[in-house]
Length: 222
Image 1 (tube, rainbow, N blue to C red):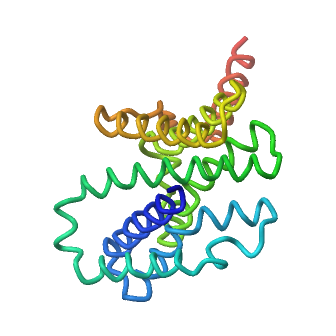
Image 2 (cartoon, rainbow, N blue to C red):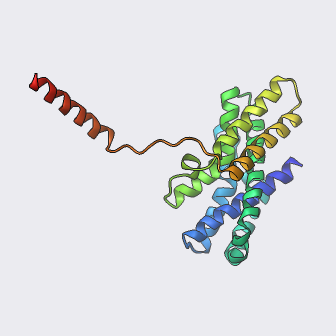
Image 3 (cartoon, one colour):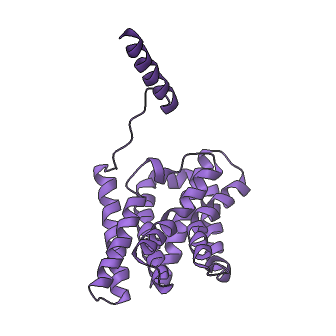
């Protein structure tokens, strides 16, 4: 079941990456590159970080084929899929949830501690999107918008909590998937996001220079 969900999540992420390529009017190769990068990028980063090589995406070619299929579907049918973007985002939430749970489980297999498990959950779920945005020279969405990476992080936390309570790995996976999915859906429905850093009026160095100038002026006036 987890394998099927993993393939489904890979496909949905590939479609998301392909749509990013469509927004930038890339050619067919560009569409496929972004589809593959988004679909399997997070898993590859996770596997390389854990020392699991070759990464799963290269051991099982189904992952790459699914990405290519998603890219081709978007290339030839983007106009028909776009009006149903809400359905794609719902499926994307499922993919995020599954990837977060699988990342946490794989980290646990390598005996990582709590922080490592949480980080692997987030990296697996968001790494592909990060690579996608960097390739098209955008600030990664996980750093500037939505309750996305945070949902994956909290999914990793729920995986750990379930384990500490003595539940089996299957139950841990279910808890992580459920927590991540519900948080992501609620964030989309109620437009929840983390607080943003307010823009500074000037650069930190300029503000420091202004402060020192003001202090020097005050001292001279005394």
